[in-house]
Image (cartoon, rainbow, N blue to C red; front, side, top):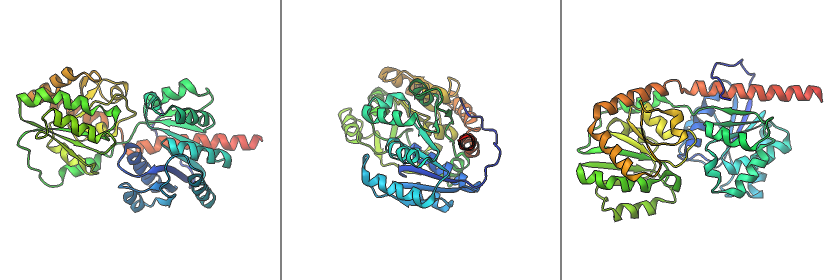
Length: 379
């Protein structure tokens, strides 16, 4: 089911503990930052336990979120589990919510052993877990005993529906878009329009993002017109993509930049943003580009179809280099049509507020805690 964002009945002051590996520049980290800060504003006592901080830590501290450092321990290690256990013993949360597989496993075991309601945050779809089969199986096994699984896409909910018992509560809550902040960044100062057409590609350099498909599609485009592309992000595939760019003789046209939290500033002058992901959950970058009024070209996958349609985006079959080349050329040649799609896309994001997302999470918390109280009274 998709949780309705109508305001639920007010919960009493609630202590919520979120476990997440880091607070660096990923989609899960951004969404937790938005959610945790809003939960504090609503009167919750919110704690975040992390292995390592990152760019999202300071805004959350400024918003009143309390932090607990666990030590930067990779994988599923007893030492990390013991650090997490100490945090739980210290704050005695009413709800434990885990983000990303490492914390889903360790935090799930800890919450189940401590008899604390446990919420799993599903941030992607089933295709991702084929790459980590052993961890995925363990996570699914533990998740069968969670109080609820909250996915940010129908694909994520479907993954659990096919593997988990019917009794497990499943909810779909879309990612929030901080439209006011994005628009604020866009209005800060005047940025000179670049001399050439400008395309953006934002996201980690990893296999599923299909950066190489984008690079290959740019070869004929750059041969026909003056166009530059900024690829912004970090990741294990970065060096391979650098080699692709060099081999394609595109070094003068494609620039790789490290991830930057204020990448939104480029939306004001960009002609379009490209996302050729082979799979996704509910893609933050695409939603943020749409909220910034930037035309988008998207791979034709279900996650992208959940947030856009043919009136608000150009869709291209996965890994179809000639089709992507043609779509980029059309985007750059037909500016009026691109702007009309961007306006439609912006309209689609206006309901995706942080408040609406927090309302939906609060409704799930309320239901979970209500079930726990009912079960306790019958015991």
